[in-house]
Each structure stands twice: as C-alpha cells, then as structure tokens.
Length: 310
View 1 (cartoon, rainbow, N blue to C red):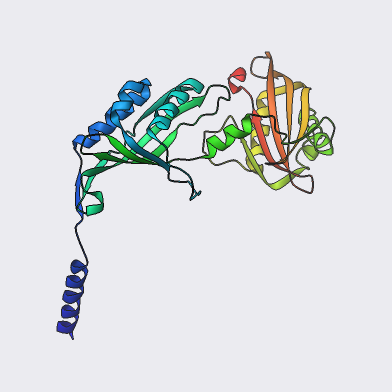
View 2: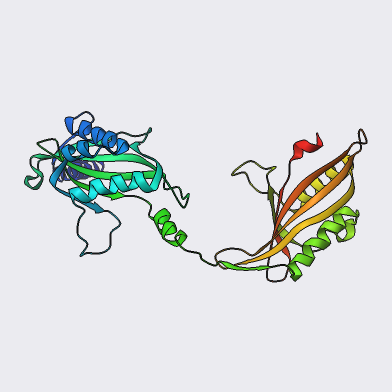
C-alpha cells in the first residue's frame, strides 16, 4: 500500500511539472527599465521635447478600468498634452516608482511580443487639483511596452478613479441634505450639556444608547472608540478636578445628510475653576452627536484642547 502511494505521488509530481511551459525571462535590471525612469523624469519636468523622443509615433495608451469597448486608445500627442494639462491645472505633479517595490522587465518568447519588452511598474502618482484642492495622490500600476528602439509604444494604467469622479462633482454646487437651526435632536444635546453643567448625574446620560460610540481628539488615530462606561468615568474624572462655572452655547445646528449619518454639531464656551489652584480657565469645546431613529445618541465626539487644563 505504501509503495502504491509513493508511486501515485511520483506520477502526480511528474504530471504537474509536465504542465509547466516557460515563455520568457524576467529581469530586475534592463535597459527598458531605464526608458521608463527617463519617461517619469520627463513627465515630472513637463519636458515635451524629451517625451516626444521617448514616446513612439504609434503609441497607444489605455485605461485598465475602461468599460467602453469602442473607446479609442490615447495617441502620442494626447499623452504629451495630458501631461502638460496636468501640470497646468494641478499642483505637485509627480510620478515615481514606489519605495517598497521595483519594476519587472519581461521578454516573452511568444511571437506576438517579439522585439518588445514589457515593463510592469508599480508607481506612486502625486497631484492636487489647482481649483478644487482634491488630492489625486495614490499608488498606481502601469504596464508599459518598450520597443527595440527604446521607445514606449503602449501603456495600460490602473488607478483609483474616485478622485476624478469627485472632481466632476466639485465643478458645481451640490446639495447634500438640510441644516436645521431648531430640531428635537438639538434639544437633546442641550439637555445633555446642561445636565453636565449643573451636576445632574440622574439625567446626564438618559438620552444615550447603551451601545454609544465615544471618540474624540483625545484618542489616537485608528484606535478603538470608548463606550458609555468610559464616557461616564471620564466625565466624573473631569468634575473631580474642575468646577464647572458655565457652558454657554455659541453655535448649534442639526445636519440631515443625504450621503451619510445625520448629526448635531455644537460649539460651547466652557468656563471652569481648576480645583488644585483655584484658577479660572475658559476654553472652546465642539461636540458631534449622531442619533438613531428613536432619538437616542449613538455617537459622541468631542474636540477640545486638554492642555488648557494642565
């Protein structure tokens, strides 16, 4: 039985090896890679003359996300004009290979690709819209084809199109909901703040959901949010060190957002007396509160400079 198993394993290994077929070579150093590095340099310098020498007359450029089967490929002239336009309408334009990768040069044996070298380039593209301020910066993958004359004859780009969609929207004014100066959720926030000011622990958290998400500038980016018990503990610690003199509302609005969560944003002028030395301190605090369909607070966000109380 053991011999049969070994024979089966042997023939399976031979069968798998027999299915392999080499179709070329991959190079980490290659003259065609230098062509792409020169291309990046010319693009970053907006050097149309250098680009004209690097890009072949029969160049074709395509988007890897293009779904239109009838779309015409980009020409040499269009490529050079695109680079020039990008420098004109955006800031900080730059294309470079990513720091944690390197391009591969592939020479295929396949006769369809004879005489050319494919460059698989992992790049980082940087640009910021000059009028919109939208940041297009992102990793992108580009497949280049370099001919025997060391010219780029083909390029296929893969990158996130979302910033460009946002650019189209930013060319006009778009409404994204309604803003209310008076609303039941605003009343809820006012009650909460005043319960805190007047040391009314019985009513302080009556409008909070048990699973409320607590966060703010006190927390590290990406760190887990706190819960209701953490919030209660934090408030008690605050009151143990400070006597609240007043919490005056400066601004409060309810935002009913079509593309996201509805929330109340409020700004407060807070005056406290620090108990350890009797010093009065005045500082601003901003809160964001999200609500569920029952009018309960499900998200509490606070922003203020804690160094003011040190």
